[in-house]
Image 1 (cartoon, rainbow, N blue to C red):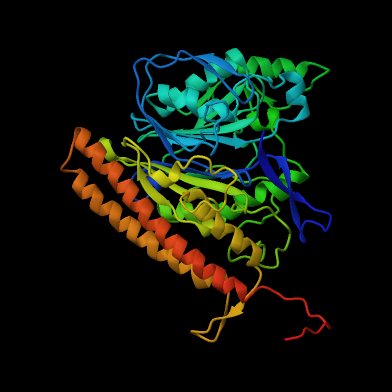
Image 2: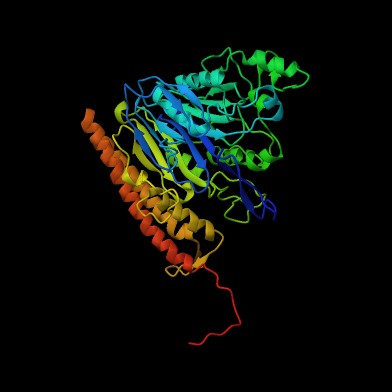
Amino acid sequence: MRKFIWAAGALGLAAAFTATPVKACTTVVVGKKATTDGSTLVARNEDVGAWSKHFYVHQATSNGPTTYVSEDNGFKTSLPKTALRYTSTPDGEQVNGQWIFGESGINSENVAMSATESGTTNKKGLKADNLVKNGISEASMLDVILPYIHSAKEGVQRLGQIIEKQGSAENNGVIFSDKNEIWYMEIGSGHTWAAVRVPDNKYAVIPNQMVIGKLNLKDSKNYMASTNLVKKVKAWSQNKKIKLAGYVKGTVNYSKAFGTNDKTDAIYNRPRMWDGQRILTSSKKQSITKKSYTLFLKPDKKVSPDKVGQVLSSHFTGTKYSSYGKWKGGYRPINVPTDVESHILQIRSNVPKEYAAIQWLAMASPANSVYLPFYTNISDTPSQYKVDGDYQDPTNTKSAYWTYKTTAMVIEAYKHKKFIDSSTGKKTDLIYKDVNPTKKAVTKQLKANLAQSDKVAKTLSGDKLTAYLTEQNQKNADYAQKKWQTMNNSLIVHSNKLASVTKSKLTFNK
């Protein structure tokens, strides 16, 4: 695993966090009857650190490779010759010619996949069914699943078959969606998994903690699980050397069997569920210290991609727990400086299928970036999203990733400091002076561009449509990046006002 967790530093949780290599990410899923336009929405922040990210489209083939071997951990599996076109957001450098950690994408059947939400298996779960070192992992998951599935449910089934046969290297949560439904899947041990269909009228905010509870496997429309899961968990619960929890009267509570709910979760995981539910269902008053939260809730108002972006940008924004304020409690926020990309995968049902899929992509930290609405029926991705060799080159101004990452790094350095705005005479900070106004204006223009390009797309078909959508993605990428680079220049100027100079008794000759 190359994910990062924000862990308590020597100065205490409320005072400082330090990066420790463990796990991260936050997921949001919204059913079609809970969204403003009937779309399905699946989204996630990818938290890593300084890894640069790319945005690629892999074209369909009828004669593709029939064997996949992961350069990450040696995982090996067979593949069908026929592969669908699909998008992905891999790491900025290949490993021996292979893109890894594809993370998110949509294929030509308008099936979306986000992988993964990292988790932790408890000690008893590992004793019952340990993880497999060279099993399927996050690094390879998108590339061996997404090009070969035609529905969200089929995605669960294909991944489940691989896990049962070849094992999983990690505890992960995986999300699949199409225009009709969303499935959330958890891999709790080396060979077991469970999945639940997201209710159409509800949403969920999921941290790095297993959340699938009691399984009703008689209801195959809403639940799935690995073969003989109930029998296995029952046997492991009765094994004196294991004593696995989670078996309840002929069924299984999957999170109790394999997950955790401890002091670490109380600081690192559960507060993120609280924050997301606070934003989407503010009418439900809850304490941030609750030991558990309802997984699926109805939102107070229908949810748009903008609203999902607000959740993924939250650092307990507007509360006393804000990591941009006094940071009371020291809880781990949804939006953190180690975000490298954030995606919202939208499958629309109110436009023709040829341009119904939108991959909203914000590079770096979504709080200090902007979500660009990228069509996925395309022949290529914008040039600045596939700049080669930028992995360790933050000065590369051609790279979209480093443009948006620069903003995040400047904001992080000065997020607690204010300066006098010469135009108003009032105290302000870099976020309110530079980032938020630019983000608001650019988002408004991008949404207007999307509405206009949808109208034009309605008049096109085939290769002409694909060429047009590809062109629109590039235009939007150019527009947003230019605005952001201009804003970064302003950030640097204003940050000079915040740079502290140590007072000295030394004098210097003029």
